[in-house]
Image 1 (tube, helix red, strand yellow):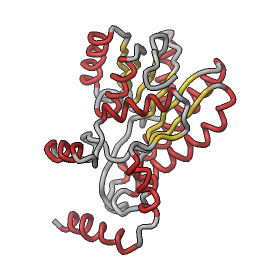
Image 2: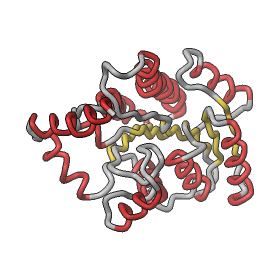
Image 3: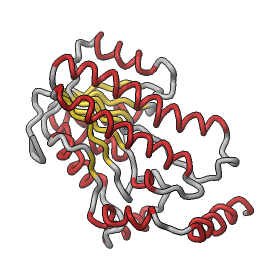
Image 4: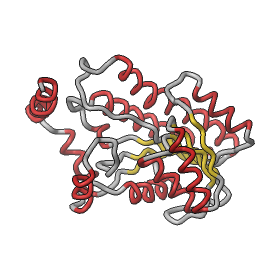
Amino acid sequence: MGQTADLHDKTAVVTGGSSGIGLQFCLELARRGADIVMVSIQERELEENCARLRDEFGVKAMPLTLDLTAPDAPDALDYFLDSNSIEPDILINNAGIFSFNTLTGTPSGKLDCFIDLHVRAVTALSIRFARRFCRRGNGYILNMSSMSCWMPMPGIAMYAATKAYIRVFTRSLHYEIRDSGVSATVACPGGIATDLFGLPDPLKRLAVRIGVLQTPQKFAHKAVGKMLRRKKQYINGWLNRFSIFFIAVQPTWIRMQVKRLMLDRGINR
């Protein structure tokens, strides 16, 4: 399978599927013919976008309103699939959050949310679906990390650290389940033109034109293709791949400039 694989006999579960990159994953998979289980806490957007998938592509699209930070979320997803006689073929763990703040200035509830969503939920769902897939001898898992997993920078500590966990976890899972005919792929995107980072639309459009950001549509198309080819990791764009080394060797003074110019100034406003 690859960039143009037909998925008419497949069902995909996509978390955070009602907006942003998650919605683009749903559109990309539906365009290839896959049925979709769209998981999100955005109930209205879920209903609207599932209807869109059914109308545009003629696939089955089922909404599941679910808070993935809840302790019983994996059980609730399992129950939904089993009670609707759905045997999934693809899992995309896309749901995520972002904030720019100091660790000491971040409320404890937000800290817990990073861990619950990026670590606990991704771990539990990946393992549960891997077990399903390994029993059957086929299946695909795609987990969303970030270029920030190589960036110990002030202001994004929880985001970067939990995304680093996703990368290492998924790479390890890839090797463990590979002989069973099941693949685990981790995507580590650089800048994507979504609302996650709060950039105004004109700035996003400019960044896409000059190549600093990639459109969600293009990223989703490439990432799904890599997943279907059972690649263990995908980093979008040669510039992002090339920059990993330079990110890793940034001296302390640069990181402190980020803190003083962006964090301290924001805190004192």
